[in-house]
Length: 172
Length: 391
Image (cartoon, rainbow over all chains, first blue to last red; front, side):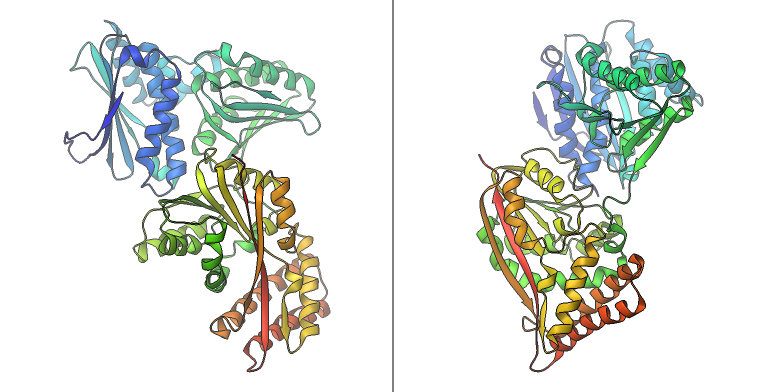
């Protein structure tokens, strides 16, 4: 496990931190999702207007993303997490290896978060499903966190979920 | 009550008398099986009630989608099976995601409503949070700081510590503490958005950085356990209707070996010469009046008992008297004038007669007279106490 400042420059988004971990280690304990999301949320929220509440909100969203990678990832390779900031928005870039053929699933699930019926789909999912699907988790982020999601498949077989979270305005 | 193990840090409880089912803490299971007992408890609670079941998630700090969907499945199924059932979900405005997630339930199911617990954290809140009172609060802190800056080190304040100021109000004490003692970290929490906005503006105007101002309910804080070396809570236990609840939270967030520092008054001991009798009468009546608003402004000397009952050891108690001789007597007079205005409004709200209110106001005016009299003396006693959380 390691955390370091990412020197990569992203237009208009300021890099805050980068974290990576061997997938085999990450997948060895479910609690990694909770621990990593709570710890990183505290780190990046310290200079927000209301650090405690921002951290709580951000941890909630980040944990869901990490749980998606936990449930859908494979043991070969690394999970990589980069967080950037632009104004009131944090950008999370989460890369993880997934089985062949899964990229299409994520492509469609991410696409659905941007469609006009995203909220209706989300309400339908929570009304009828016993357990959340990865698709409904991504819809949750779009509906409840006003997140904008997209997918980067350039590092196949790993995929990268790019999620913009405008939480500062919602917290303050 | 069900208390989960180390991997799930949450509590589930059902109070059949008030028909409240509560979820608190962090619930992030990998599968529904891990929370089966809690899901079953909700089903049992629903079966046990007639009419309304309150589902209290005010202290729910984190809940993943796995848990969320499992719990709401039970709630939705119950509503579909029982037309007599109403579920009221109580979320907190402090925990942003809960209201956004749970709000959908009232759209899906008309028998479910969602209420946001926001204002009225305690009965006298609307008076205390009147923004016109801000200059008085600033003057009060200025006067008490002359004493507290020498008192605080005896109670554990020192450079480099992690400190929290709970019920920080307009944040001026946190700024003074940072300048004087340079703690490594200060978190300042209050339930008044207006006060926090003022605090942030003042901090920005004076170039003060590093104070983490946060909105929160002091009796149910988002702050984690055992975080701080020193926790202050000034003039707040006395205006909160459940001081023991607040102390429980202060105890929770301070580290073992760390200290919680509280200040409180005994208003009936405010004094002045000349016109001592009029002053005495008004402050005795003030203590009685505020008890109707569930405030105990006589709490100061009870600090030792409250700290002991909350589990603290090595308790230190001392008192100091803010007087008109400490600095500019006009500061003292301005504070009393502010009290007269606020407390007269409370007396009116309580339904006191005009005659009572005239006499009540006169005592404050006589206190001002004593403060500004060239040979006068006016005092406002305060008790400072602290206790250590056992190692």
